[in-house]
Image (cartoon, rainbow, N blue to C red):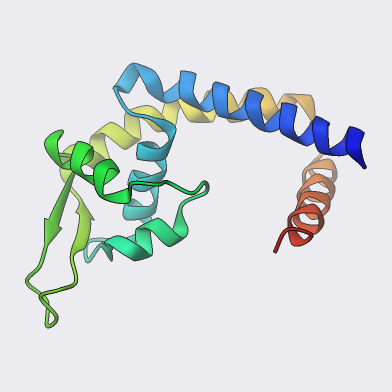
Length: 139
């Protein structure tokens, strides 16, 4: 179990580093890339800030700071105009969509490299299933 655990940790570190290298040329972090991806999927209505936080792949201690940086870059905008003015919705902007589209090309290249290491789709499914079972041990 210890060897498998260490192997997962080493693999996670390599994946994080590869993603950071893929998005760094666009001036964003992997966490910011993830926020933009989530907001693109949410559509034009966006999501409340806490919903974005809950959907992140990795926990981010400062979702507000992440969104602040993206807002300064004009990649997202905040909106309080809904029925509950306490709720802040975050929406991706055209600038954010364009940035994400450019970063996606590098991320796809990274994913292609990963895909070549496990070229059989059955291997992808088996690995995903095993990792899901491993994560369940921490839930």
